[in-house]
Figure 1 (cartoon, rainbow, N blue to C red):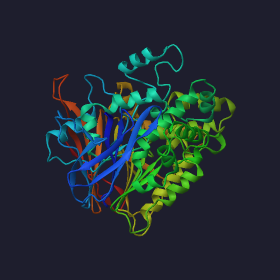
Figure 2 (cartoon, rainbow, N blue to C red; figure 1 turned 30 degrees about the vertical axis):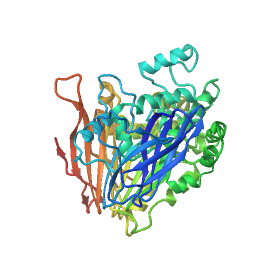
Figure 3 (cartoon, one colour; figure 1 turned 90 degrees about the vertical axis):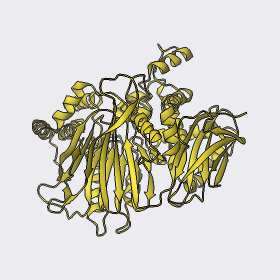
Length: 557
């Protein structure tokens, strides 16, 4: 008798009434989703490394409705559990012009006593069926931490192998990756949340390892270790199964040759393993980026890890094919009200950090000679200097792309770059000191992390200093030392920095946009008990026609 091991996760949902639901069973079976309105879908499980998964497609759901559903394995109901304390899981199909996009990144496995923003979101939605819920949840990287595990997982790893052998208390293979997903997604509140709110995912470094693909020298050192090959292949395999498949529409799944190959054999492990090995050896052969359209809102989720070009002479955040794909996905004039670019790494950083990364990139490229190049490589790794600013040509490319999309006739009303990674939240807006492009779109960098992690006090102070006037001056001095040509734009912080476990929600209605930041908190004076989301900032985004930029009006709570 088949049982439900993980899930269900509600993944793809569109306005035409198509959806997918992801599950893991404990043995081969047929997974079936049965909706209260009579809509059904089924799929046979496929096998990877002894695990059994299914992605169940649905079609014909009614726009503007939220339909309760149940999951059956070989005809036996397994979800919702008979003793569930949560409301019924539903599949909400958008039907109006309003879209609520909630996003964040960096969620370590919950520990007792912590404050988890996803847990708090789930608690609030479960307690109040009338509460406004997200139409889609964007998880912008570090969904699992392969290189920094919980105490419970460390004990589990220690019972499985000798932790004195590399990679020590980090995951080493596919089976150990599955442990991370169980630990993260079997949390009762989060499990229910992911069963009833559609989600879109993209990886960042900790899904594989800290500072993944920082530089060519870094990659050469990792490939020389005896454990790295298994680690990266297992990381990409587990990401494909647990996260990437659900990003795709039913039509994209039907046309995917790997998905067909995996489902067409009793054991798809070798087919997926070969794919992951190819993705690691030749990143240009695989695309992890994807596009989703929600009515007149377009989301472009961009891979800023696996698609990198690391050769020092031609470093790029995106290889040529990936850059071409991104350019081609820009909406046609008049076809889109809002453009969202999801990139785990922020485009606009605190100015000191941006300039430090550009300075370091110039040193590594040889602007001050071989000795400084060696110093630059060491700094790059120790200080995590590997965001868009550390790839200057790619920073310029993305900037030009955004300006082009924002100045076309019939441009979107807003262009928002949604990011995480840096363990604090802020809003930044670009401006052009010398020549203002004829922008008609509102452009903003919206950064939100972590969902669940801790930020030491010195790091908080460093980020605040990075935004300060003196920090900006120090950054410019570094840029001059590195002989860095400054970009034509500058930017100002118009919200934050905010620290804590938090989520942002962007509400889009017609051509208007509103941004809210919620932080996970316990009741004052309590160290245990329910965690709730408290609104820290709630702001409309309004266009200043004279500056061509966003000036949000903020309400603090």
